[in-house]
Length: 599
Image 1: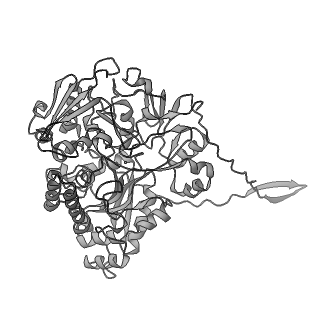
Image 2: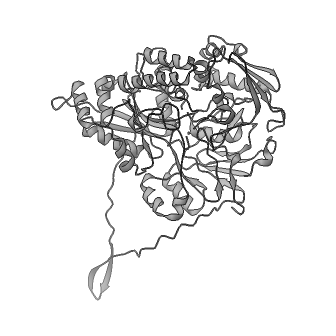
């Protein structure tokens, strides 16, 4: 979910950081128990300090009220306390994996982006620049791509990076045991010859997949059918090279990217240092990158104001103060990042099995109130549909799909589902991860649902536990899609998706197709799947958009499998001394960042 797309010679493209902001995507992993958190509010009284004084033979009790003298908050000064040529960039969570072919979450993606280099890189202006590749050619029928690799790229131990390493990377991504949900990009969206059979386990030999090393410097990719948007995929992690099998419990050994992993203390920090063998090392400006794990946004902000980190997210309640402070407001960045935050509904269990009940939920959510009152971040755009701004097919404020906020309609739908004053609706279980502002957002949604007569139980968990719980409930990954395990108790879940390239299929197909590995609704629709299949095969962009819009209507109106909340942007604080480069899609590539002299 948080990868990449392109402009320049690969086509125009219009993009997440922190696990709490997005998902990003989630590959299937073994289920873990979901932690249930009960919040107990404790009211602490004002403390009065009492002293006892002895006068002659009589004991007298005297009360001394302790008062604090207000200390003026010092004016914010933008500074960096790190060692010279060191960038301190906080992460909201530990990377789930350091395996470049298994990673799908945003935090892992950000770390791995610095350690590995694929065929192309994305820049902040939306352009795509050559990386391991120098050029590519397409056959007349649009099915064969021939990619030329640079001859001076080596692994950090000096071994040459060859086309076979890129073949091995694709094979590892498709390998069922790897569990990477992005495999569908190569099996369904832009189907590579033989990829589906290998990914399903029907064929055991990856040599039958249409990704070949013609020689050390030539990579050939053969598609089953033309895909006009395929060049946009060449900057994604599905085309990263592989050498060692790595994972969460085993650190990588060699890298081909701009940085090396030199320290990793889980729960504390990672340290990256410049890779002297990287082909473009002379242009990598920052020598050392420290990635402390700081899940608490208030702590991130405090460290930022102190000068201990160069970038920070912040709690929504601090928004007004940051905007009012002239110096901090200069460093508040709101950047393009096409994506959407949404609620998914379990269509297979509990009251959300009922379509009218799901329509009631969709009609009860006031997106404007969520943005302006709950988050207090008015720059966000409410999501009326799924496809976000800066992506073809975006419908804007006047979207013709989805359900608008209408509490009267919500109550009517609830009655249609069989609930009312004489038969109250049962409580629904709403799952979310506790990082970032998710709990704040979901508490507000819970209040909206309860206002129309739908009781809510809010369940939160650590990000990795949350993903594991949802992945264990992923219907497309189970043999019997009609059964819902007892542990899959959620009726609603909060998720977000930052798009990987500027095409509606990167959301409507990759995430919300009934067969997708990234949706947990249990929803099935042949009509939706057929429309997406037609769109993939349709070369005319205008006709493709019509097909995608029809599919979007089925998803949001006819099935109400998901409810969009707001579109993403990349909102964060960045020090004035940092010259940053955030691409609209995917993780930032820190080799393009610079620190002003003396920072």
